Length: 92
Image (tube, rainbow, N blue to C red; front, top):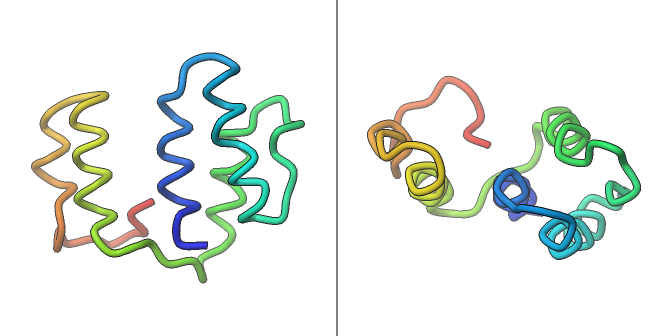
């Protein structure tokens, strides 16, 4: 269950149906839900994840997310998503 958040993060950046087909079965299995039949699986997964506050992220998740977002969106994400970064909300 620790890898649901990272898989959702990856889903944000996949392109096309093949990318979704590669990631969604794992998320369906881990969540015991069926998001691959959803018209907007990313949105539905984010809502599902937000309601499951009991989930914890794997060690190093914040730094990994910072690197992912820095490479895919903007390098400045490294400035605030790093291991040990102070947070007031969940990192995923």
